[in-house]
Image 1 (cartoon, protein in one colour):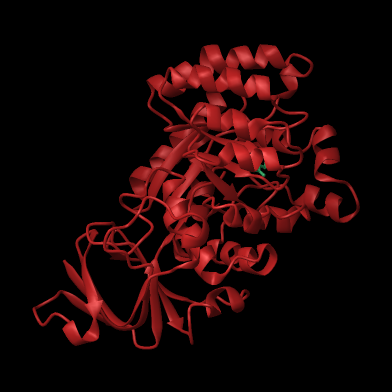
Image 2 (image 1 turned 180 degrees about the vertical axis):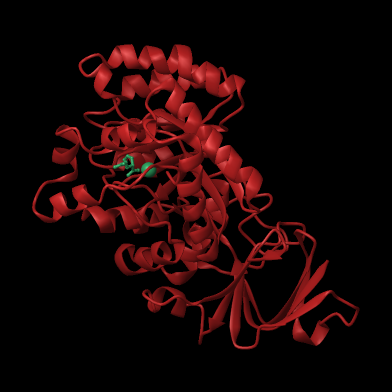
Length: 411
Ligand code: NIG
Ligand code: FE
């Protein structure tokens, strides 16, 4: 099956030899070809060029992209897309004046989602999650990371990960899974965090590993959740099962968790709404990707990750949605890209690099995703007719996507 896209107004993020990630000043460059063609063969990108070299041989399908942009699909490296029900009531409570932390202290928050999920049969959890996955694919996401962490019992954590693995089997999108049993201390372990840490290390981790349910391990390193010491313990244990860390850190307080993540070779450190100079220094020279989640800041009215400061310090930055029922009930990467430009002062080039190549890096997929490169996955977004790519974040409330192709198949 050969699909030829012709007369593309501008083909974005074209890299003959794509780097694994882009950092600092390099993030300001988005390589493009104007008036371009793109050939997809099966599930791979076969070739591309400018229209004066358009191939003349037979193809199965030609798509005229006059006036339209084509870019790689978004790489959403941080989601909690598998969850049960919603937390609309807490949203209303926050509007009326309670804070996110106050709600959590009253037994709401993550623990509330865990109760719902524990009582939801696996098939029903799959059904709800599949509907969300289909929605984000139509919004242009072509690779996604999905965490557990709303189970908080061995059985429910495994159920979440099985659902994520089943989604990976049934849908063309690439899925990476993360074990986030250390998301909150469940009610049964209130006042006995060490007891829960023992359960995580001695029972959950070995089962997740032996059933091959996750590539990554995560921990919510935050006051009232898990300490830097807990983080060290969990990540050391996880290393013996070859689970690579991607951690929640510095959402509300800077405890030194970023340095801990870097010390354990974390693939990414995510949130970073509160960031110290020592945190930035810890990231320098590391292979750890800082990940910002601007739609979480938007929804909770908390500070935005100082992305400008990270990039200006020469570091890379990735953008992801954090799709979850409590802090970000949205999996829309287009909104994330726009919000990064509007609120974090990233340029459109920086935001697109952060949401494609760097997002792919943050889930170990940069050799197959995140750029228009020969041999990479045939994953592209075809926009509606728009004047330029800067229009994508500019017209932040419009759906500017005309078509999405994932694994060579148009949705
Ligand atoms: O990334 N901060 C920790 N975990 C999720 C939200 C959890 C929830 O409120 O359900 C996050 O924002
Ligand atoms: Fe999260």
